[in-house]
Amino acid sequence: MKKNYLILFVLTSLVFFNCSKDKGPVDDQQTAENISFTNDVQPVFDQYCISCHPASGDLDLTASHSYNQLVNVNASGYQAKRVVPGDPENSVLYKKIDGSGTFGSNMPLGGSLSAAQILLIKQWIEEGAPNN
Ligand code: HEC
Image 1 (cartoon, helix red, strand yellow):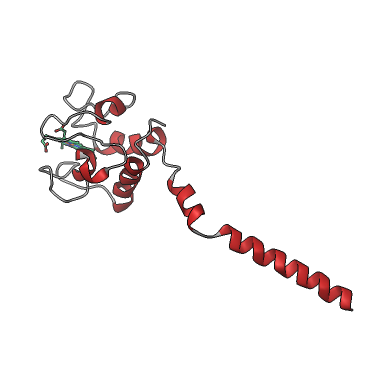
Image 2 (cartoon, rainbow, N blue to C red; image 1 turned 180 degrees about the vertical axis):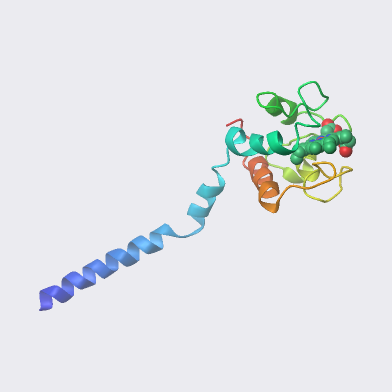
């Protein structure tokens, strides 16, 4: 009987230990680091932006061109960079979708992205705007 209690105690401790390991800020950060420019950000451009920002335009947001048009590139209409890696608050791209009006009209012109899409682009910039 005593042996059974001991086994039960060991098992309970293991379950407890595992559960507490699964939670916490470290895991939250890992989730946030998984944004892919190609798989997560570009589809937003494809759906909401390229109708007005096509391959022939001043700001080309089509796949395989958009990254080089954005990251560390000066905006054509504003005295700021389109995307400053790690700094969404100083990135024209982010300030033009966040509803702030810092750089003129909100994008997509005449509408807005969902809160989740806005956050996605913000997090991609915060993560250093990788070409991934
Ligand atoms: C209905 C047309 C239209 C759509 C859709 C649209 N834009 Fe624009 N965009 C414009 C126009 C016009 C300008 C130039 C005037 C201005 O800066 O507001 C512009 C300017 C911009 C600029 C500033 C470029 C610079 O260098 O000055 C950014 C960044 C931008 N758009 C991003 C986006 C993004 C991201 C989307 C999709 C979420 C989008 N736009 C969708 C019409 C549009």
